[in-house]
Image 1 (cartoon, rainbow, N blue to C red):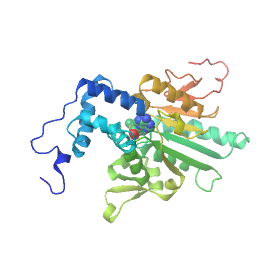
Image 2 (cartoon, rainbow, N blue to C red; image 1 turned 90 degrees about the vertical axis):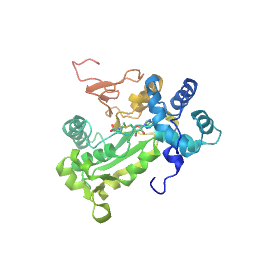
Image 3 (tube, rainbow, N blue to C red; image 1 turned 30 degrees about the vertical axis):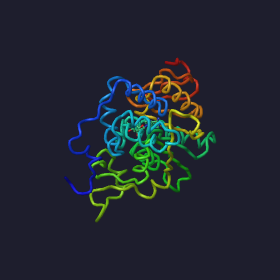
Image 4 (cartoon, rainbow, N blue to C red; image 1 turned 60 degrees about the vertical axis):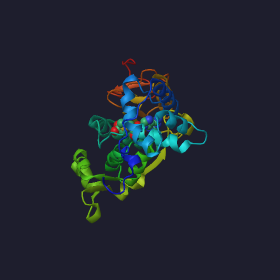
Amino acid sequence: MRAGISPAETGGPGVGPLRLTEREFTLFQTLVEREAGLHLGPSKQALLVGRLSRRVRALGLPSFGAYYRLVTARGNEEERVRMLDCLCTNETHFFREPEHFEFLRQRVFPEWTQRAAQGLMERRVRVWSAGCSTGEEPYSLAMALLSHFPRGSGWGVEVLATDLSTWALERAKQGLWPLEKAASIPRPLLRAFMLEGVRSQEGWMKAGRELREVLRFARVNLSDECGWPTGPFELVFCRNVLIYFGAQARARALSALLRRLPPTGYLFLGHAESLTGSAEPARCVAPNIYCANSPPPAGQGTP
Ligand SMILES: C[S@@+](CC[C@H](N)C(=O)[O-])C[C@H]1O[C@@H](n2cnc3c(N)ncnc32)[C@H](O)[C@@H]1O
């Protein structure tokens, strides 16, 4: 065995896999949906075992039942945060769904420029990446924004990056990724905004100062509107997050996200997501892109 790893972390010599009973699974399902809005359907039993076993063992606990009692004990908020960290799916990459960034470049940025010139908006935009994972989405947004509205152009840009997972947020704050991640960043933006690591950071890529200056980070639970930023945000990106939510939590979150937009703002969802269930009026303007309350252009209906 490698030095420095305790038997608890490896499962321990001679210890078989932990068994999750149906009753325990139901208890965790209810807890996770209540705490984070995440719906663990029956097919997610193996996922729960896979993601929590190591934590249960590391704590030296004999069963999932014992872990459930620990995690639900009064005052054990810290362990609930750890549990959710283990259960969140953090997959992401730079410029994911490139057509969304094309929409910004071709439609949104010229629209802002024109409206500002007409005195209809201030030269100041706030953008929210809700469910930002390890940062690839908000840093992509910052690169897209700053390449159009650079420092010194008279425009002020702020990107708020939030997630439930403290682990993912820490990684996002570091702004450091393996160099392979650079492959999906357009070359000119890579050259303008990212730094290639040297010496101890060889093989890594780091966000440059200009990007760091416009980014803010916070832990925000999208299933509990109480702790949300108030907005308004000209753009809200909430992509590939609500797909993991139960129907009610998803509908609540969608309505609350739409309420954070000004009438000319846009909400971006993931490619497999839609506004189904939301009570707020909104108009689909491109695949998975929604505009808040503004009326459709003359001659067009609401889809
Ligand atoms: C698959 S990633 C999507 C990342 C990015 N938006 C993208 O499309 O590439 C989903 C993220 O949602 C976060 N998440 C899950 N439940 C959440 C909740 N209740 N509140 C906030 N974030 C949540 C996870 O921690 C994870 O980082």
